[in-house]
Image (cartoon, rainbow over all chains, first blue to last red; front, top):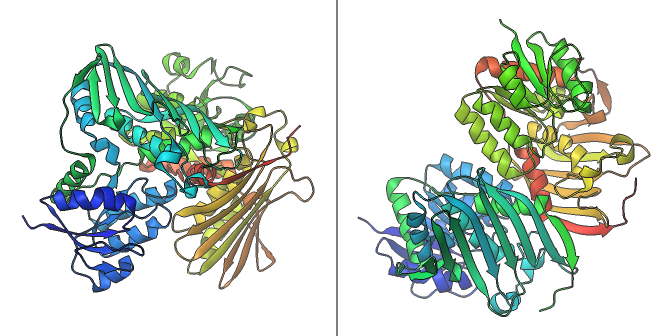
Length: 308
Length: 308
């Protein structure tokens, strides 16, 4: 098969740490150009904009978007108009309206699109999918607790209106759980703790349900220094599976399980290649929709100001 | 044609004031049963639940839902499982998740469904649709300003988490504007004023866009006693159309226009009958999605406590 010629837009931390290594390790993708206003990506031609890349760069088949969600919609539209396949980092857009429109536009363009919920490709998620088959799931408990000062130093945009606050990591947990549940996940109620000098929550407690019988609770904390945890417990009639470390580790009834050695981003790019080869798309809105519903129906409590 | 036998669930103020008179005036619908826990509807058999109505009542072809949006999802699912057409008062559900799932379930059931954005059937909206044809729309301005104490006495749920606050009336304006615009309407930014003792905004200022060239601004106020107004101005290169009184009155460049004499709810039930006859549905999520996006990306400011 011909390699899929890939252009990358936005060469920030996530592109450098995850996308480019995964692309280089892939036997299906070839990184041929980057559009960046900041640091230049070595080894390939760099352009100052997507428009310039598309007009003057080498031919590309697909574009991966690693710019912030604000402003991304118009960029993805440019790529779609040029007939390119698109991979869009999470969260795909800054509003549900844009994300819904993008789904229609990808389908109308007849290309392959992927909303890149990377945590769904954590090694343990594959174990969980297999383990859940034929079992009766009753309850899911998410604990996603980390120290924002350590993981997001200086990222003031997280706290502004339209920023996700604690949902920035929390949406990863929601992307895993929605991948595992056979039916849609609905927010029943939510409690959001918003620092007095911020617009986005620093902690959230969500009560959700899926179908009639599965209760899902999530405890998200962004100011948690000791014993950080990114865990999901799946309580079935038949036992308990626990994902830890964001899905990298798995245990069943307390017994550690072996997991795939393939990392999240390589597995995600493998999925993108299969979508392109099959002429399909994977544009799931659920994680973003659950966040928006949490803001919509959530009870907001003002808490102490946040200072880095 | 046979009349469409209709059951009504929830016999509160909106059912009594609007639905039942519109159904009685219709030559396509026949009201055959009502499910209500409160006041009984005269002239038809009354049941204490939808389940009882479906099991023991006269045969029905369609169900109209006039209960509050909280809890409505499970009720509509019951009707769909029984193969009934459904008309769902606005807003259709309490979350976007439920509304999206309902769209899928209506389509899977092979029945006709209508999310009943009644303001779209205001007489002047038909004038606006015709007037806009071939014109170049540049800007839309919504002013939706009323006194909540007058229109919603004692309705504490409006202010609770999940309540719409000023969006309860404002969603009507959004339903009209989205009906008139050829492209999706996106929230760019929003300012929400939330009373210190409430969870929902008492005022909102929205900056939106549709396509690349149409700017839409909305000023919503729920504590406005003098000169209440429910107006939408459509600014085109060719002139200005103004809808007043929630779409009941129309002027072009200041000159009053004549409008249809058919009221909102009779026109809406006519639309529902045509959908059923044609085997189609009209399940537009946009107004609710815009409200949710406004909560999601909006900047919240705490304002003086609200007391009725």
